[in-house]
Length: 338
Image (cartoon, rainbow, N blue to C red):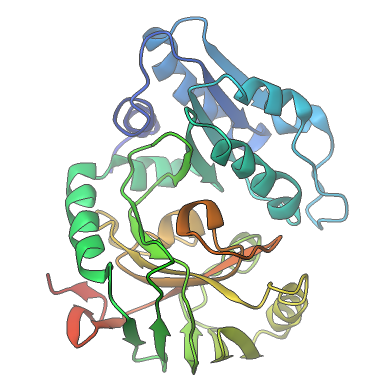
C-alpha cells in the first residue's frame, strides 16, 4: 500500500504524463478536494501557473436523492476547450451520470488533444492501492488479453454463483485496451486496468452480480455477497431481475426503465489490474479487479463504435468467474491462466 501523494504522482506523471507548459483542469468536490490538492501539488511544479481547479459545489447543490442533479457548468466546458489534461476526481451523485458526467465525456471525445483521467467516487483507499500498483504489469497483461479477445466471435462466462452466459461480438465493434495511459480524445478511468467492448448480443443467459453495482448503487448498497443480483438476459437486454434486498430491487427495476436502452447491455469487460487483491466496495476500483464486469446503458460509442446511446450506464461486477474465449480458458475461478 502506498500513499495518496504516491497515487497522485502516478496519475500525473505516469498516467497523464503531464509536460511543461500543458494546461491541466481538475474537477473536484468538497469530499475529495484533498485528493485534487494532491494532484495539483504534483502537476504545479511540472507546468507552473497552468493548473485550474473547479469545485462542483460552487455551481449549485448536489442532492443525494437525485431530485435536481447538477449539470455540467459552462465555465468548466470553456476551460476544457484548450486544456491538455483533465481529471474528474469527485464523488458520484445520483442522477449526475446523465446531467454532468456523460456531457463531460462528450467534451473529451470532441477534442483531439485532451487527455482525461476519470475518477468518479475516488477515495483515499483507492489512491493508496489502485493508484499505487505496477502499471507496467497492468499494461503488459491488458495488451495480452486484448490480443486474445480481439477478433473473437464469442466468450462464455460462468461462475460458482450461477452465472452462465455467452456474449457475441461483431467485427464492427471495437475492443478497447484501457491500461492506465491517458490518450488524446479518450477517457481513462483511474485506477485502471480493463479490456472492454460493446457486445453485439447476449442471446440468453443468467448473470449473477455478486461483487458490486455502479452508478450510485455502489455507495448506497455496497458489496453484494450477502444479497447478489440475478439478471435474466435475452436478446441483449435484461428481461428479469431478482434480489433479496427489496429496496435494491425496486431501485434497479426503476433504473433500467429510465430510457429505451437503459436495460440494454452496452459493455462487456475483463478486469486486468492484478495489483488489486480484494474488493473494497467501490466500483471505480472493483471493476478493474481480475474478472468480468458487464454494464447496461451507454456503450461508449466514441470508443467502441456502437450506433446507439443511453443517458445511463450501470456496471455490475462478477466474482470468481471462468472466462472461455472460443474454447480457450483465459481465467478460471477468478485467476488468469495466461
